Image (tube, rainbow, N blue to C red; front, side, top):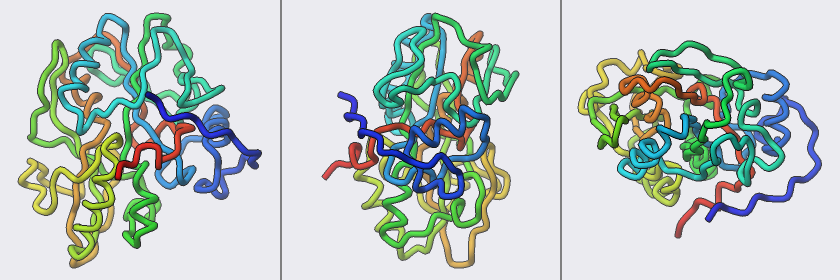
Length: 275
């Protein structure tokens, strides 16, 4: 069952305090053309990845997500041709994300801020949990988030870990990385494990080579972050994983969010918190 959307309160539509913007206000800015990574936006509300495919490929995506729930936790699905739903009440999935990526035969062909021109009545939208959702909880517990502090997009990496294939979908696990002092890792694991619908606890701590990552300074998606001496990299499963599978599996058409440029939903982050 989807979390019940929170009734929106009046808000000033301004990017000057993105953490304080209600989701509908943030989406209106993106609809108007603002392009920005969304980490730190609309604090207290869940953010989400997107993967949009023709109905003919939708079952394979659903099965891929079911077999790989850590990187692909589904929060909601919009029926073929449907452009709004409970997670973005009054919104439009074609316009309300800061930036999208369009793939044809697995190749990126466009990065629009509006996918209306690419829309088809047979497209099914999968709304997938995002680790940006638990970043407020990390910060509230004294754990700094490097990409927010440094004003960059989160770094994301393809790994050598293979996801379980499903039908036509196959590809590697993608992870996001947040460095922190070793003394805070246990707290980060404890905090994020309470959010299984948005990737949950880390999948790896420490040596990136064990995931097949050669250079933390060269992420496959997003931006590198500075890692201060004495801090260790911590890796979470990432909702860009379905896009990596699209690149490998080469469906005729697929659309996703530009990595780090998320759908901000009307669901409170606490809706996805477990005891």
